[in-house]
Length: 511
Image 1 (cartoon, rainbow, N blue to C red):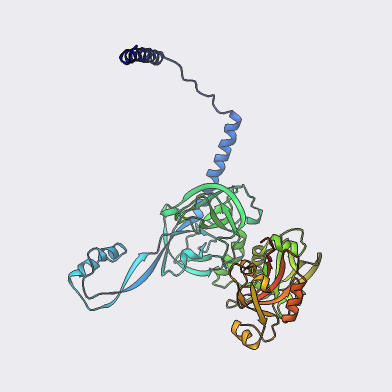
Image 2 (tube, rainbow, N blue to C red):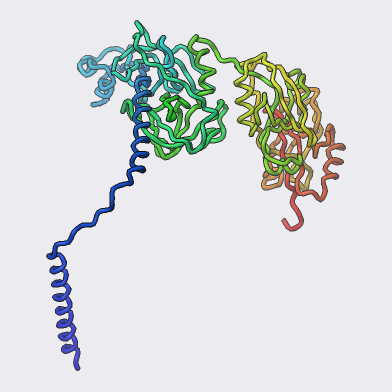
């Protein structure tokens, strides 16, 4: 059988199959059939869903009247050139409130100051906090602005003024100007300490200018800080309820309709919400806003120590059962901590009856305690708990932060990749040390060495090696000799930023 006959037979069979299938499809499509629908939701389940829905609606109706939109303006002073600007440039400023500019394009003038007004990068939100017209919001919403306008939920518009700010917590209080309405609704602050991860919440604000927007989500985490390096006092509640530019200063609300947080920031690489939002806990705001409303400055407690988080390596070195707590790496002279008997190497595990999780928790707790307050402190020292009492001082605005996280850094001899020398008057002056300081100064750190990997820097002063005090080269070498065969070498290192514990991991023969 040749190829042409095979091709003809194949075409015939294909046509027959196509016709049969087509007829079958046509017949099936032509024959009517009933669409089977699932049964309706069970009455009990539907009732629960409606009850939950009613809770959301009730919370929104209760809280939205207390939420305001905040518009800010800043005056930009520019010198108008004596010649015409490029076409469209003056129209750009007309858009921001200078309608006369285009008319002067044909009337060149000598250079002179000229003011242009424009809205400063979007708006924010706020929460009415009392009947006197005080509104709680974020500091970054009202910082460095010349004019403020507030729109209430019922669209009444008021001028407002900043009465108090606290950049360290990113909180601010503004106040309505003029006659304060007698019917102002006031928000109720809840207990943010009682918030649980997984709890359902609502966020209310004006994302991208859409006032009175309500979004829903859950508490994703507690005790967050943004991007790990801030000097501010952060103890954020993390949420997955959508918040965007314009939500800043608006409330985070629980299902009881109480404010448990002030929405403040988002973690994003695209300029808008990406699933991670942050709110300042209401309990932090509760202690601060009355001070700001009176135009006062926030006073913060001072313990007088430098502390650092406990890594697994430090846990092993200090023979701790957990990484919880704050390791004391420096006690400032004549400080409340020194007077209370706190020592370098102590681990602070409880502060005023509360467990200390980490540096952030202790730092915020001390800062949130009024100066002059007597506080109970429990430390771990040589594996045993010791109870102490301290009377807090006051942290001055120009002083370094009291509790700070230390970063790694280390000391050593040749096998560790660094060179050291005795601390002289000259090197003390060069690197900012006191004449009474003792130790050996790091003069060189080899690239890629264990010392470099540990973060040791030129100018660091090594004062201890494996808890042995080091005041000179002889003591340093003797202390290093005692570390032979050990996987980790614990050192206490001092720099201008304070003292810190560091761990150097010496190279072994197989390294």
